[in-house]
Amino acid sequence: MEANSENIKKYALIGYPLGHSMSPIIHKELLKISSVKGEYNLAEVRTEDLEISFNEKLKKLNGFNITIPHKINIIPYLDELAPKAKLFGAVNTVDIKENKAIGYNTDCDGFLRSLEAENIKLEGNVLICGSGGVSRMFAFESALAGAEVTLAVRDSSLKAANDIKRELQEKLLKDCNIIFLSEAKGNYDLIINGTPVGMYPNVDACPLREEVIKSSKAVFDAIYNPIETKFIKYAREGGLKYINGLPMLVWQAAVAEEIWNDVKFSKSDINQVIEITKKELEKHE
Image (cartoon, rainbow, N blue to C red; front, top):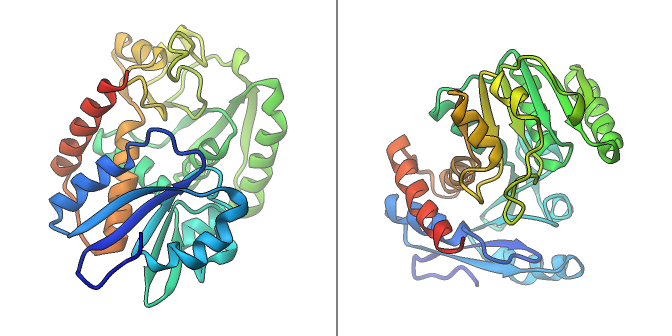
């Protein structure tokens, strides 16, 4: 797993457990498009092994991505944080150059670029379902874009939603509304699902009532398995602009590659990788 002198760059995704990840397929295609000689592997690392793994293996790579449960835990071992990583207090990409490890958050770039690619504006009244890590990022980016943010959560997630509200006030001097998912009504410019509701195998579940979704202008679902959740199905039937989580997954990987290798990807490059990843996902349904 170490970087070597044969000009083959070494990258990995760390997390625990990793299960079936699309990251190696996505990065393999991105490396091919950018003509970079590189390998991308999965590395399961338990929380208690993170420090030793970082010092003995990860620092010898050219870069790596991070997923649950290490996005926050990795920070003490890094030399520097990019502005968004510092703002969110979470890292999903590490670049290693001259033995210096710099942490980035490209999840936000993945979100913003996937909206931009589909010409969906992050503005007006934005309803965000959920209060986990990804919903927190959606709330921050929506507030930064000047949108009026409403968090819709279950009763058990009320504390986490209030934590996000407090952070928005303290870090960005912005506010947000908090409601229960069951109370959601009215017209929204954008509804974002940051919950796992509707994810495989619970494909018949939906975080919001059909009429709430269909009365909005656009929707974004962080879920990409299945490709069409019930949430997305209602949006499609309502003639809304919609996007699932797959473009975000590919774009955040592309931004990591841009950081690692100083390359650029076009919209058509990304669409090509999205299609390849989609076919791979369909094999596992």
